Amino acid sequence: MNRLDQKSTKTKDEKTDIRTPFHEFIRKFKKQKTALAAGTFILLLAVLAIICYNVVPYQINQYSYQDVLCGPSFKHLFGTDAFGRDIFSRVLCGTRISLSVGLVSVTTAAVVGTFLGLIGWYYGGVLDEIIMRIGDTLFAFPGLILAIAIVAILGPGLYNVVIAVAIFGTPTFARLVRSSTLELKRSVYVMAARNLGASDSRILAKYILPGAIPNIIVQYTMSIGTSILTASGLSFLGMGASAPTPEWGLMLSDGRNYMSTAPHVAIFPGLAIFLTVLSFNLLGDGLRDALDPKLSE
Image (cartoon, rainbow, N blue to C red):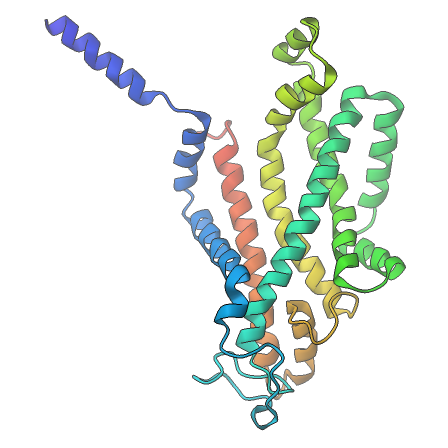
């Protein structure tokens, strides 16, 4: 009976120890306290981006010339700008614009870059050389300089900013997926699937792409912060959003003229950019640590 009890207990313990990859990821990610805090902040931003226009205390373009350049107070938490507009309301509504630009541009770059990286290295030859040489050409320019050049060609505006950010982000995903494809293409299960007659599309979708997804997720998360920073930089230079849009970079540009008399006009939009970009970077670091199977416990 004792032996049976021991076997039963052992069997239960073995079942308990069985973890799926998702459970293992959750277990590791829970240990990343900084990443959890960053993820919570980003989740809060996402909620605010959805409900911002319903919760702001003032309309974003509500002028009040008797409250021009007022400092932070209970009436105006972040103060007012040169037109008496409430900065807190504008920063809050700017969350939707910045997150939308970041998500749309990076999603486009990820989809296009992943597709090019998969087909380029899998088929190799001239196609791979063309894709990689185009990528090398784009990598030769700093991201912001390349974005400025693209917007200068297309014209100013948020839609063109999204296109510019997507274009300079695509080679990063293409190279990342290419390196993963290079590693997985000669794996045993891929070669077995090919010998069994699996089509190229099935091999790419079922065997190679899933192996590259962890790296794509990490790069995707960190690229959103970079894209928000780039979009804000373009708006700061007058090549992105146009007045009176409550975009953080544009608000920061407007506030630089009052740094000596009313620094709060520039401080709060700048702080919003800083915290958002930092949160996405910290979340990306946490995801990388949780998704990397080579890290020791």
